[in-house]
Image 1: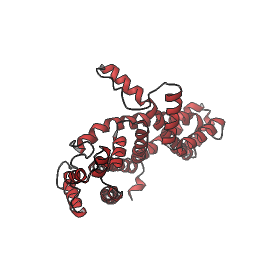
Image 2 (image 1 turned 90 degrees about the vertical axis):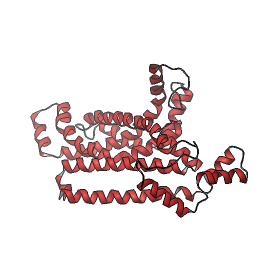
Image 3 (image 1 turned 90 degrees about the horizontal axis):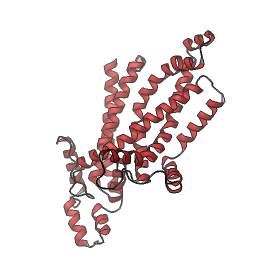
Image 4 (image 1 turned 30 degrees about the horizontal axis):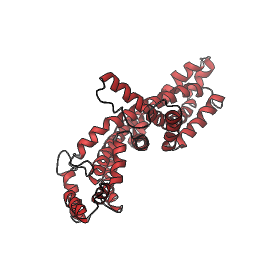
Length: 326
């Protein structure tokens, strides 16, 4: 039973991978203009000679089916997969650009997820034993507001308040451009520059995590062991931590592995607003400049990361709930 379940899930992920593989090749090419047109006009050259030279250099003069065939060969017949060189940062290899930017994005995702999770956990510890009270009311509508507010809008508000008006934090970049910084000064600069992006991502992520924990605790509160524990006179804190939250967190943690795609999409928006040099900012720049290799390579690696996260989530969920194996 378990093997058949994993086989079905693996087939699903393979189908998703193949669909994404084709979309990330054809969709960028539907936009008008090419990288040669944009780079030539950006450099105030723009003549047909420069455009033709760049078109030949990037291989964009080849028929689409030839480009597609080369694209598939570079993915399936080379190891590691090769996506060539960036048009915008020529001749930087795509793989090097992606993995150079990946740590900054992972930093934002991991820190904001950690803060959002423990913020939601702490609030749930109070609200779960006081259902329909003031704490539950405030937490519920605050999380709904955070969940429904577009992260790019809240990022702009944070820039306006904490960056422009109060001058507390920088509003652009991932570190100070000052040369010769010591290691300690550089780390402080990175933390200072990442404060507002982390805040924006934490608030946006908090809403969905709290709503997920709240729904899970509602199910646990109906369990026999919780109903039997209430007449024993246990304090609210003990009842929340040992009986309600402890038994509701495991499925929440498992389901969080499926939220990688959402976290990455949030990071893309946040990085583009703050000019934070992560993978999201790289993808936005590549989209604007029609940098097909960077788009293909970045989306390929992100798809692999999301699929791996989904597989881990499947394994954890089937471990927690054997009924899913059928």
